[in-house]
Length: 132
Image (cartoon, rainbow, N blue to C red):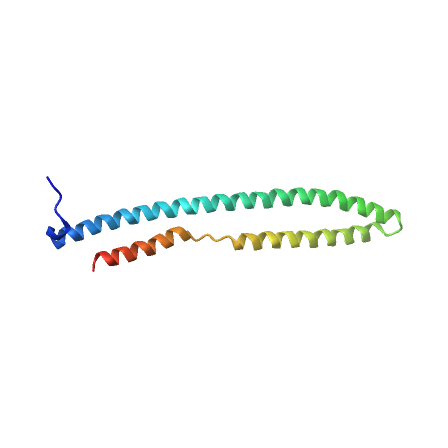
């Protein structure tokens, strides 16, 4: 059986087709949004992992260097507690800077599914054209 031409079909048939096509588009857009958000979440998880591991390694290095500098200052006559305080403040300041930088980079991540938003706009325009 041949498919009826668009002009020979009833308005009810045309709206039924439009409804089915719109449902298909919505399902496809939801899948696209899910895929896009999963990819962004994966990248963000990787970035957080690098931030955590880098922070831990840097912390261990600062502890060793700090201990060496404290011992050096103590050998040249600075009381050990003052040397430890100075080094502790320097290390804390550097740590604060690194944490702030990591947070700034995380805030820059765009979590909105931009591709999905654009295609939804295009789909809405297409649906509007189909009803005119």
